[in-house]
Structure formats: structure tokens, C-alpha cells
Amino acid sequence: MSVPTGAEAGAPANLVAITSPDMFTGLMQEDLNRVTVLNFWAPWAQPCEPMIAAVAQMAPRYPHVLFMSIEAEEQPDVSESFDIEAVPTVVLLRGHTLLAKLTGGQVQAVEQALRTHAGGHAGAGLAQSRAAPQAAPATYVPAGGAAAAGAEPVDDPARPHALPAHLQGAQEAPADTERRCRELMTRSKVMLFMKGQPNMPRCGFSQKTVALLREQHVDFDFYDILSDEHVRQTLKVLNDWPTFPQIIVHGELIGGLDILKEMIASGEFQALVGAAAP
Image (cartoon, rainbow, N blue to C red; front, side):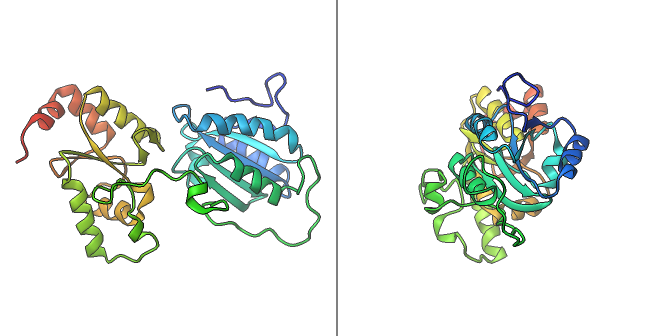
């Protein structure tokens, strides 16, 4: 995946690739009134490619904005400071003030946010309003709601792969969440709790886990924990395992990516998957 930077011939000077936390901090401190766009990406995530291309096209049209290209897993300190859990994610800042955090590779949403926060017309100067910028919600939702944001296809209600529609925005009792978790863990022989979906993983560990399972020709089910904070937090406690992905076989946690690798190498995983449920 090619990432244009200001160091390359023909690339806009206001598009830079971040190579260290010190570089990031130094650039941020140069101008605390400047609007900065942070594009977090990963080479394995196909949805990052159109966003990278779009940012390269936006940079010359917004010469007063600094565009930073940040490979999320190569710059974990920077990623963690903005709670980046999925790529692509675009963050807009004015100085150290959060203006918008946009997830899901929605190019039009980034354009809209730039028009709002970096001037009404591309190439124009900064807005002259003296009003202090307002912090945006953690996740940007464009006009039209989730459908406009490219939501995943609706699940089979009997076998949801994400937070069911009837629970969205609802308060759920802890006991009910635990019951849902146990039902999810036992609905298939191999269950993967991951970030994203198998054909569109949203973290490198999930992507590598899916690849390993497919290499082993394992028929597995999945659930997107990024869609369901209740399930995400409950599984951490229920399985005494703080990270994701979590691989469940016959209703029991076997571990995460590293343990899966070890079990495949030893042949233990293949034997476990091939065995009948206890």
C-alpha cells in the first residue's frame, strides 16, 4: 500500500508520514491554531486504500491544513493516545482540541468535517470566527445515519454477528448480557469474538486470526465486539481474558492469537476442533 508523503516528488508539502511520537509531538506544537488531520491506517486493511488516496487529493486543496499519515500499528503510542481501535480512522484537531473522530473510511464524511472546521471552501483561509471550537462526539455519523455511513448488512436475527437492533441504545442488565455472552459462546463449535467481520477485520490481530482459521479450513462463527460494548466488557470478565480476539471452542476459551498459533503448531488445535463436544 503506497502512502504519499510530502517527502516524495509531486506530493503536497502539507502531507507527512509520522515516523515517531517525537515527530508527531513536534509538528503538533508548531501551531496550536492549525487544523490537523490524522489518518490512521494499516497495510492489511483494504478500506484504508481509498482513504489514503482521498487524503492525498485533499491536501493540496486545503494548504492551511496539516495532514498526517499514521500507520496505526507502527505508531502505537500515537494510536493509543487517540483510542484508535479500528482502521481507517481519521481524527481532526485544532491544536489539541478534538474536532471530529471519523471511523469506517467514509471519504465524504471527512470532506464534510473539513468544510465545517477548516473553512467553507477548499483553499480558503481559516474561518475568522472568534468562537472556541467545540469538541465533537467520539464517532462521526453523517447525515442519513448508519445507512449513509455504510453499515454492515443486517444480520439474521436468530444468529446475530453484531449488536441486535432491538438492543441498540438500550440499557441491559448485567445478568442479561452474561446470558447473551454464554449463548454466543456455545452457538457454534468454533466461535471468534473479533474486531470487525472476517471479510473486513478492524485490527491486525483479528485479521491474522481469521487468516489462520481459514488456512486450517476451520468452519467458524464470529461476533463483532466493536458493535456491542456490553458483550465486549462482559467477555473480558467472564473469560478472565482482557484482550481480543478471543477464540472459543466447544463453549470454552482457548485464548487469543498467540495461543492459537502455538496450538496449531503443536497439532492440539486441529485435534480439539476435530473432537466431539464434551
